[in-house]
Amino acid sequence: MRKPIIAANWKLNKGPSDTEDFIKSFESRLADLPKGVDIVIAPPFVSLPKATELLAHSKVRVSAQNMSEKDNGAFTGEVSAFMLKEIFVNYVILGHSERRAIYGESDELINTKILKAHEVELKPIFCIGETLQEREDGKLEEILRTQITEGMKNVSEKQALDTVIAYEPVWAIGTGVTASPKQAQDAHEFVRSVFTDLYGISVSEKIRIQYGGSVKPDNAAELLGQKDIDGALVGGASLEAASFAELIKNGVVE
Ligand code: PGA
Image (cartoon, rainbow, N blue to C red; front, side, top):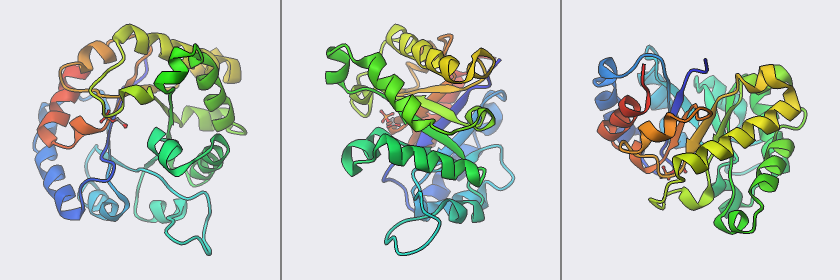
C-alpha cells in the first residue's frame, strides 16, 4: 500500500507572519485528521525557516517550491539545495508547470535539479503535465513519457523511490476546471506504466503519484479514491488552514 501524500503549494503567497498564522491554525486541527497520510507545506523561500522552526516536532513536513541546480557561486537570486538542507527542509517541488512555462525551465534543467536534490537527500516532488492543446492534439502520452524519461535520466532506482511525482494537467491548474476522476486515473495509470518501463514493476508500484489541478475539499474524495492516485498537490485550496484540513479529511479514507 502506498501512503498518500498531500502537499500545499502556496506559490507566491504568505510571508513569515502569514506562515506562522497558518501553521498555528493548522496544527490545532491535526488531531482530527487521518493519521496515515504524509502532509507537506511548501511556503516561499523567505518563510521556510519560520516553517521548519515551528514544525520541528510536528508530523507536517516542509518543502521548497524550487531551488538552484548550482551549489554556490555567481548566480544572483538563486538558492541552493545545501542551503535548504541547512534549514531542515525535507522536500522540493521541481518542474512545476509555472516554472516550465513562465521561467522557461527545460526537462534537462529539471533533471539536473532532481539529481542535485537527491545528492543532498532532499525529496523532489517532480511535476509533469500536458497543456490543453497537447491533450487535444492527442499528444498526452508522448508529452508525459518525454517529461518523465528526461526528468528521471540517471536517477537511480533507490532515488526514484524517494521521488514523489505530481501529475498536474496544466489546463486544470488554478482554473477551477478539474480533470474528471477517470481522466486523472487514466493519466496516472499511464505515468505508472512509464515508471514500470524505466524501473520495473516492483519500483513503479511503490512510487507515489499525486494529482494536482483545482483539487478542493469537495472533489478530493473522488480523485484520491482512484487506484493510481496517491495524494494531491494543492494550490488555491491550501491557503486557508480550514480548507486544507478539510481537503485532507475528505481525501484520505482510513
Ligand atoms: P491549484 O494549483 O490547486 O490552485 O490548481 C495546483 C498547483 O499548481 O500545484
